[in-house]
Amino acid sequence: MKFAITGKGGVGKTTLTSLLAYAYAARGDTVMAIDADPSPCLGPALGFPQEQLKGIRPIAEMEELILERTGAQKGTYGAFFKINPRTDDIPDRFSALHRGIRLLELGAVEMGGSGCICPESVLLKSLVSNILLYRGEVVLLDMYAGVEHLSRATTDAVDAMLIVAEPTARSLSTAAQIRDLAGDLKLAHLYLVGSKVESQADRDFIAQNSPGLPVIGYVSADPAVRQADRTGTPVYDLSPKLVAEAQEIVAALDRIAEKA
Ligand SMILES: Nc1ncnc2c1ncn2[C@@H]1O[C@H](COP(=O)(O)OP(=O)(O)OP(=O)(O)O)[C@@H](O)[C@H]1O
Ligand SMILES: [Mg+2]
Image (cartoon, rainbow, N blue to C red):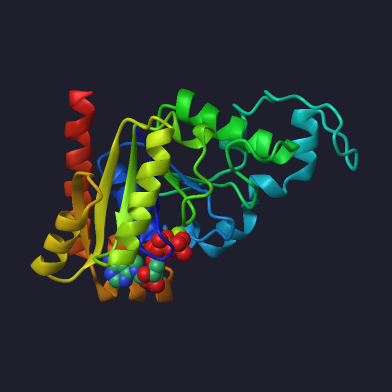
């Protein structure tokens, strides 16, 4: 199964991605976690050791690789380059592996649908498509905030898109915008995940104000998230409550996969 995790800035996308990654890994699935945020923070959330994090270079920053694969030439803007570069070896070569979770950092690049056609965006789109179409792992794509980046290339091939929303009107309104955009992209499966919920009233608020999307699960507000951040520990190791909630979401996603 391949999932994109999206939503307004700061709602808890990276936290949810890290919880799901460990929930899948814990039951024996191999997991590929992709950090699509230009300022990467999924690695720390997954508790990757510092030395390993230092060794990861975001793909968008690997100029030589980009030039080699696309055949583009440095400094010749507008010249010809390959629009279907080879990328199948990139995930294994340029990722880091920790506790059964493979981490790949995409780095900062324009991922918008039609706008930018430059060698780095072509390589990244091709890489993400290749991963979504051909890799056998559970793939979790931690998107960056907002809606602008949603493009066919990144969203068409996912099995489900999880839109994360806090119990606030604003984050639900961003969720509605994302739904509209994804609707244009003919995305089949869109689900809402309630984040940082503190009460039944919070759950009700999200369910009642969902922009027509089924709520697939909730993640409670938990001080363990902050503690995890401060200690470089995956929150999965610190909060049995969040573990149980992540497992419930995984079970719900399993049920969807069975039906599909
Ligand atoms: N379940 C939670 N309980 C308490 N705090 C949380 C929870 N989830 C996230 N947070 C806090 O909210 C902030 C943002 O979390 P996170 O980085 O997961 O969100 P994000 O949506 O990935 O943000 P960004 O848009 O910057 O990528 C962090 O300070 C984090 O500690
Ligand atoms: Mg994030």
